[in-house]
Length: 199
Ligand code: ZN
Image: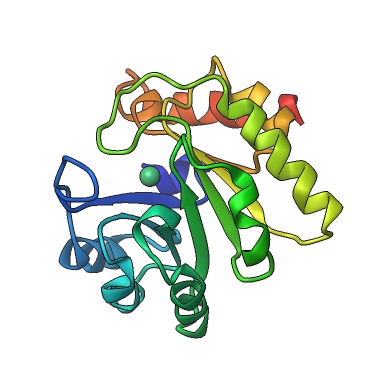
């Protein structure tokens, strides 16, 4: 269904019950997903000590791996190891972590994931002030002439997709907006059309 829908990436939320309250899935499920789709798998690691497991997710089939800056005191090294393993490396910021903390990592990652809810559960409401973070990060990458993608995760829907793209987001992660819709394929088409209009 996802392959036929025009979705470009499958985002996989990995939660460990420690960095966030919930527990979801690990490497065996990612390996099983790898067998049933050609779409890139994007593993968002909401786990403590992500450096211990990031490469195992690449081995399991992830093409993109992102780690929380808040969870890793050596995020520079972890990003480097993900890239060396052949995957796109991303750094994730919780709603309360300023985008300015990333400037010394510019050039060391392929994408930034800005959380627009506090991570840990699906179905939460979008935090509107994230739009300002997206704008500030977009301005920083222009000013420093450093290319990377800006991804937004949490409460993304038709209500905010156009605004997010206008603010500078390149990649929107949608959960409930797609999977709780009566027609998930139509929901993906509508989101993509809204993103194009926003651009
Ligand atoms: Zn996520």
